[in-house]
Amino acid sequence: MALREAFAAAGVNLSAHWTIADNPDQYDIQLNQAGQLNLQRNGADLSSQWLIEDQNGSYPVLATGDHLEVQVQPPFNLPYDYAFLLDRGGVTEEIVADFASHGITLSPQAVVTGNGLQVPGTYQIDLARGVISADLKAAYATRGVTITDKAVLNSRVLVRATAAGSLWIVDDTDATQSYRIFKDAGDAKKLNVVYYNPWMTLHVEGDEINTYLDLGVEMQGFLYVLSYTGDGKAVENYKLDIYDPTGKWLSRTPDKNKDPKATGVNGARLVVDMWRSMYTLNFEHFLGPGDRTEPSVSTWLPTTPKV
Picture 1 (tube, rainbow, N blue to C red):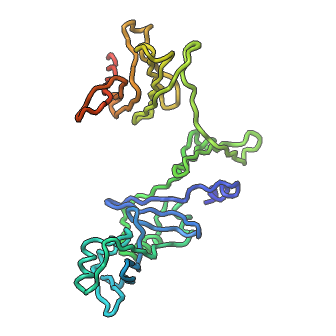
Picture 2 (spheres, one colour):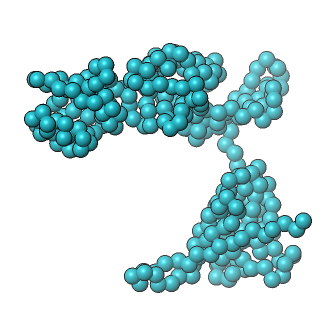
Picture 3 (spheres, helix red, strand yellow):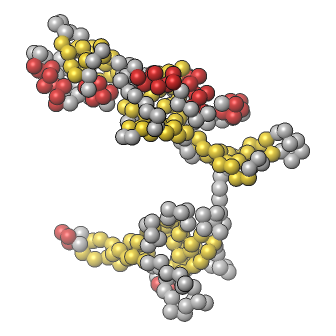
């Protein structure tokens, strides 16, 4: 929290957003404008009372014990399991049928508004420490939710220790921003913070002018950049450059120095799978089903290293 407050004092509000994975559910915790934390389950608010509205009227619903009470005259009960359905903001066929059995015609397009579930913003302190507190579990329990001991807490703000004790990268994944924190050269008790926007220099040979077509990234972070030189009318104009995860250039296809018979990767778009096989949409086209013009697709297999 001290780090978050230091950022806020400088005008940068780090995302206050955490998730709890507790198979099979995911719980979202996010700070709202009122300074409270909203608690959700699988993307839906967790409420204890709802208002169902359609063109015929409004129907308050209250969670009481092990059932839901529809507060009309005379009142009637619904199964407590309907709470999660109502949390999604709409009604289902089962709810419409239950209302009908009590003489109320409810529109399938009825709108449901719940009171949600909020906890004090001070709960951030434990969350920032990576702790699912007993108070937070108790708050979820008021909505019939049990957070188990196997639950895993994750923050949308991550810290990478690039050099232990001297250099860190803070990644705010919600805001897609990163910050570099490092020791001050003149005062070891101070830390400097700067925006950290990674960049890389693209490989260019001689005075060539490249037109870039597409970029692909495989699971380990290696980057594949597709481009062409000149007017792009010849196969040999097309280049595929591969970079390592740090942005260092590794190789280019075709490499005429190693293989005079090598040809260019003359695709228009590319994607790389987990086995580093590459697939391209090509400029070549053909008539597909219904005489629709479609691009051809090519598969490019990586070369197996020699043992």
